[in-house]
Image (cartoon, rainbow, N blue to C red; front, side, top):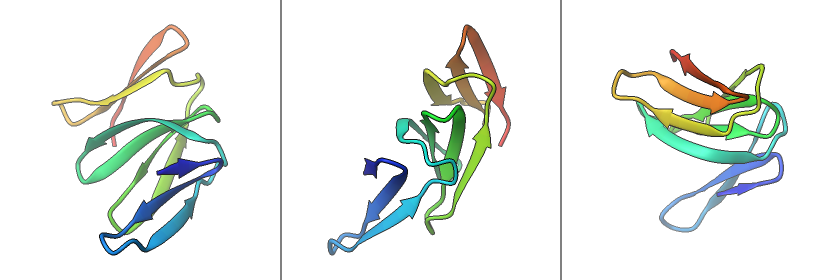
Amino acid sequence: FRAGGEMARSTPDGEITSLPLPYGGEPELFATGLGYLWFSDQKNAIGRIDHSGTIEEYPLLVSPLGIAFGADGNVWVAGGGYIVRFHP
């Protein structure tokens, strides 16, 4: 789940771990692929989180309005009148 400036994960036994986002934005849109949960945030960035909870964020020049993981293995981001291919 998500909250201002962080994401959190829960184990099956209910243990919750908070994961602060490097840019501090609130995650909004989600896509899965290649073992990651991909997300966009309000700080003009997309990011990914792996199974261990490691978060990486990548700044964009536009505010993302949509995010999808493509069959081609790329992450596709729409925003600011553009569609951008991001190769992980």
